[in-house]
Length: 218
Length: 218
Image 1 (cartoon, rainbow over the protein chains, first blue to last red):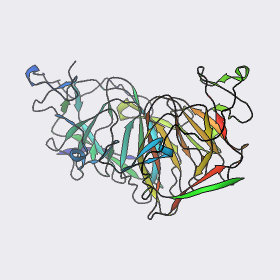
Image 2: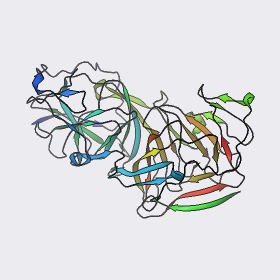
Image 3: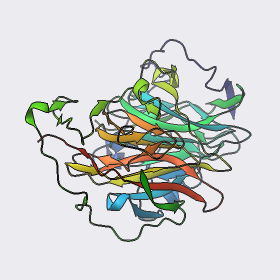
Image 4: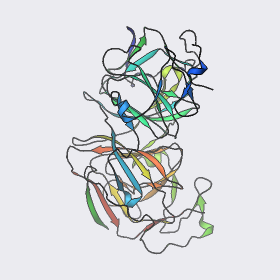
């Protein structure tokens, strides 16, 4: 069902090099959007639900449980008052997983916004660790995931809209699309894993069934 | 020089209870501010440098090195392009330290802003782990620290202004004041440690020499 594009080495050797052209989506024709099918998640961003487009779902801890954690200051979290009353701590919101001798790494991503319609053509996973994303401004972003296990088919891929104040932590092995920032360049704090050596920690696959589309209204 | 107020248990038993009154600073008279001594760090917040007030310094990686890491997307960091050109990764910006069987914990603090002049009367340290703070909005906050080792005296305490886009990671054992948010309530991502049991992981001391003051202009 999928073609493995590459197995990347860990970040210590993944220096990237020059920027590729972020305008090239390279995934065939853009699907037509039926206005009658438009629906909004956040009240201002209509989405389509044509067969080859992804439905964009609200992000809740329950809905996201198969994929990892939602990082948010929810009353459902264990929380308590500290700092002489000047702070409320929402405690232990993400299961940071750095298997097999790895350690926690804190990084910043400076992300460019995507253009829509956006073709989802690849997914990736980290077999040795979790990966968390938290926006450093109260802005939404999109989270495209599929459960751990076999490489994702079109039925298993889901898309969530992380609202302002919500982050996510992908559990080890969860398939996910690279970060999808919206509207403007933005900074994200990322918490993931590095190992003692440059072992393989990222597998990327192309979706053999063709692109799934993410569509936003104007 | 200092009086140990208490050794707190780790967060698993530190539930805090009810809010204390955040308006009570309880540290004696407010020092007079000599307008001629006012100086600004960020161009809009004049500060004083009278003997019992702390000078507020710009936060740089070099100045903060004795205390830990500055988390920022600096050209001095190891950075590289990822996600098909849609993100630049500033990699491994904080030494996350979870000694003696601990593990990394990700939490959110919802913080209330402090009132100024602010009396610095207590400092705390974590002997078993580092602790990082990153604001979830592009806002400044204040960082009051003293080097690891003996409990801090007035000469060893320094204050830094973390600008928008800057976070900090206190190295294990660094003395620090609880979070000082400015201007408005704000959310912070916190990365620290939990242990396998509720061992002591926070020591808090009162400054026996009396309060140091943080003063902002109006």
